Length: 123
Image (cartoon, rainbow, N blue to C red; front, side):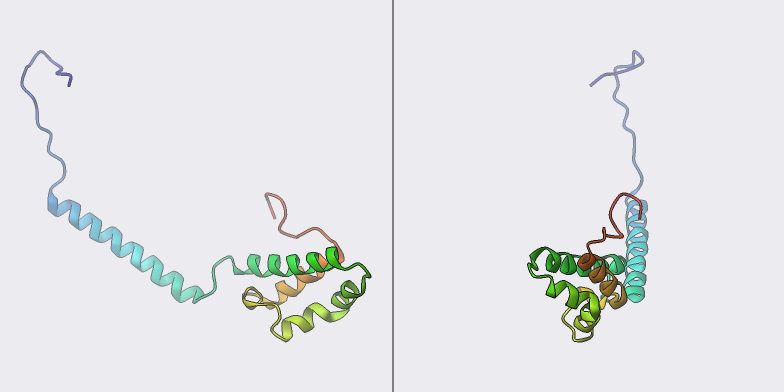
C-alpha cells in the first residue's frame, strides 16, 4: 500500500450505499426481463436470425445432393421442383419452418452449384 501526501493515516473511501446498489441491480434486472419478454413476444420460438438459418439449411441440403449425386438425376429432380415438393411435404425439417421460401431458394442455389447468398463478410 502506498500512502500519498506525507500523512501516515489511511483514508477510507466509502462506495455507494447498499440501498443504491440494490435499487440499481433491481432496475437493471427489470430492464433485462422487459427486453427478454419483448423478444419472446416478437419472435415466439423462432430465432431473430431464422431466415439465415432456413436459407443455409436448404443450401446445405442442395449442395450435399449435388456432391453425392453421381448420375445427376437427383439434382435435376431438385431443380425441377423437388425442393418445393420436399418443403411442402415437411421434409425440410424444423429449420425450413423459419422461412420456407428462403429454404427452397437455398436448396435451389445449392443444387445448382451457385455460391451461397450468405457467403462473405457483407451479404
